[in-house]
Image (tube, rainbow over all chains, first blue to last red; front, top):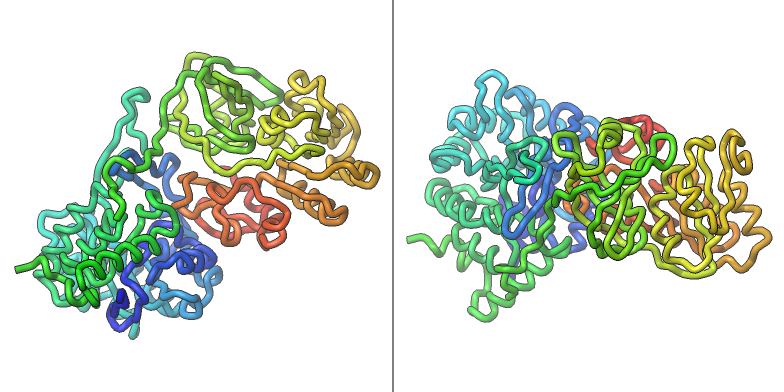
Length: 300
Length: 271
């Protein structure tokens, strides 16, 4: 009922652990798989080892979850030893990569490719050292990164992860598709700030952070909706998906895969199984036999 | 389908005034808060020092309307904490994690400031035997607090109590005293690994409080993983059968970057 084909990858259901949550060790990948996810995205890796920001790096209140972890990671070389091959794990694994400079995206992609992930996702939120603005904020920069990654990714499909912090996400998605992207992941967190009035300071050590959780969902649904009208490649709709009906909504906006990250905070590691069960209940009640029937149905 | 509105989880630090500061030993300090805290023995808090960092600390005192944690000055954060005085504010969230089982006929084995992680357990038990060790006399804490308890003390240099290690004493105790049903432990992981081996040898149940680098404390960031366990939500307390399955226990831990290193390297790294 929930089987999904994403760029030729057969998923038992469309739920995908979003990058940045738990996907830091092989054991955590397997555990997410046991809890019902269709696929797992690893925490982003780059060409070097990074310590990330001081704590607090994340917190949540009500419908808002807020983080600035600062992309800590062991680096691609260490990860190659730690994880080994990704295609012999019990669940499809999406390797998330980034670099600082364009050529580093290529270098990390080549190494990730050798680990045999089901897909490579590209985090383009890092500001480019030469241009002074992030890759996601400019269609030309997005295209350059996409082309560089595609040049080094062999046969493994590539998804570009976009940010909502732009004037027009459609032109960015279009640029990624034109440069060869096989899919779009939408969206990353929305930029924000929270100040503790008793401490008289921003709570995050990094001051500025990214908003996720249910508060992000309407922004994510809008972005997926707009991107669906612009590109032909599949979309992994990510942002605030917590319940089965959120995943149905994302599918109606046009998503093929449904990312879940902060949902783990609100509902526990078995959020994937819960969301899938709830999707099935809704589908049976509404006589929907497959997700293909409702994908993009909110358009027109 | 469940309804999300109104039932979303909140985890954010709350600024609380420090009501008292007690210097416990050389570089160990307890910070008290006049505030009611619902917590179980072995649970921990996240302590935020604005502008510096946020770290996990065990609840070391807990009564009806007061609680405290005990910090040992080691790195940048714990050294900065030393400057905190009565009346200053710290950000608190929690308590987090699971708790000790609280079985009687217990022996508590603690090393160094690890005693603070088992202190609310000691308070909850009827008459536990405590084996407590530290490097020197100056590093011993809670001596007044536990002066009426059944406590065997060791120091590495022999400056107080018996010269040697807690694990030597534990082995002697278990070889003679067959009444002890369970061991609770917290301290350096090398010590806890030895305690684990001794418990296996004498077939005595064990619960150990483990430490790993933490960020979120509510089970989503994956920083504190040991094998497939998430220390902040599955632990920090693990029992014998769980410890038996943890291949990384006593051997490896992960740095803030996620890189797996030996315990030695992990402990020589200061954040």
